[in-house]
Length: 316
Image: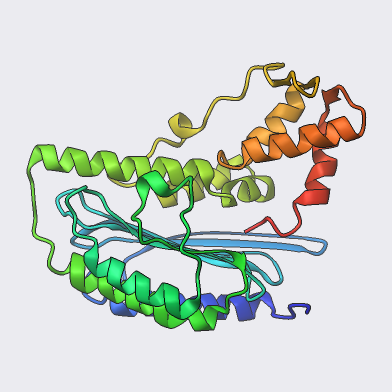
């Protein structure tokens, strides 16, 4: 069934999530004091919108709320909220988007910044909401080292965002009542360093694997993409985007001896633009296509053809 929702209607939906989040955190963050970054590109049938707002609070170092639209029916909402290092509070992670309601991506978690943090309150809520929404009890492999075992996940399956709204509210309320409000200041240098290392690793994993940044880079250019990345992963500790970007593969280093296939440098670079967790999958798909077409060398043209063939529905 075609999705005839307009970008304005989608924005209104995400505005409801954003308003609920801000309302439930009344007193925990400075709602009327924020920084906003936005960008808009209109070309032919393409309309790409992106808007990030940054907030802070007494116990929150950075709260980023990001709405985006890639095309009608395809957009989403991202909320990343990180604690100040003096407080043992889990980071709040939300990404809901894709092409809802038919193909909805959902990632929702409270990511612990300390191994001793009691995640039982969130676990109980997550278990209840997972059952109510009929979500799979599955891990996201690339997120597993930096998230809780209670993460809620919908892998581009049917899920109506309106139906998810009560679950979202329950998790926000749990984050506030069980973690934010009772958290006492802990200025111990060793504990703060451990929490800082955990938050920084979380930011690094998110940056290297988030599918949105390649899309933003192609739409707005590297400069604007870096602005959105800084909004999402700056703060204290702040991720150095330059240091977090993985170096390009050495030209000619990709060789599949089993298939007898090698890669041209520009083809390698194109695949390298994809999120880190997707690159091995993409590489295998393209190498199999090269074998089918009798091509001993993967060219940029083949990569672009494979993008058109397989990428539909993958953008978030």
